[in-house]
Length: 350
Image 1 (cartoon, rainbow, N blue to C red):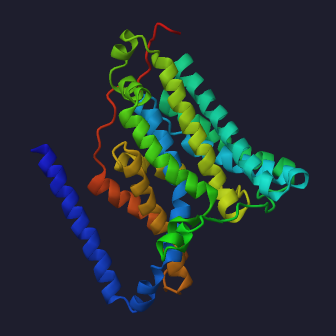
Image 2: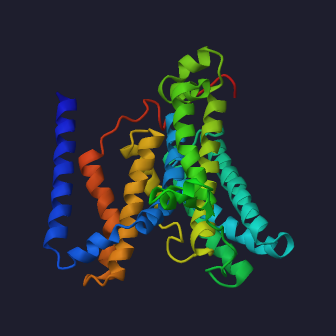
Image 3: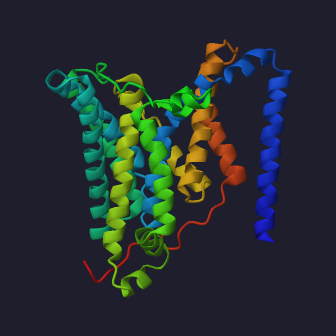
């Protein structure tokens, strides 16, 4: 009965959203411009914007599936974004632009993974409250990244650095429409498209995936089977750090080539939207990608709507993706979290 009610609510939500969208297009004086928005370039941009949200979400779901709620992902993205620009800028004169961006990506993954490991030690070794520890990680990097930016560059925003070039895959990139969308893209986008199905397969069909699920649902059973719960949780947390590292680097090295330290920094809440994405995707990497693509598409849409001259306050345009998050949570927000998520576990292998 409860499940039927939830299904009905989701169907109503889809109908309402679809009706509002169709009515908005039909009734709008900009309807021709709106139809022209949805080009292959628009979807390509949305796919690029989905990278940090998707990877943060997939990493977050691995951590939470193992029993550790990692809301510090936002901070890990900030650390990765800053590190990627710093390392790229300092090595470009030595190794060249092409190698420097890869070094920047690698450094971002290392720093973000170490940040995640620190979070893991605080939560697992010292049994700290996971929510408070996650917030602490976020606030630490939210403060440190702009501070080091001022120290190193003398300003809160970095200079621009080299970025990744788009890579066209031979033959496949010649496919009409699909070739431009999927096979002419940044390396970080290709990494996302590989990581999502691999993460889904590992979680669903491998022994490690089974250990991750058991760690968050029945850690005692996993411990009894001779598998270290703490090691599984550490590994899952570090996965969240590594994926956040790629996501953070994607925001700088695949787009603007700059770290922006103002306000919430260049990350601007994408880590938290990643958390919403994996909740909406019901802890499924593929579902997480779908939700992230939706939010990224709305982000790209608000930019394009401003470009065609919609007579609406820019602040309202910027709120579109976040309004969508609230709507999604209202209609699709139910999901069953792992039974032992957020709980510290006393393991015999400490």
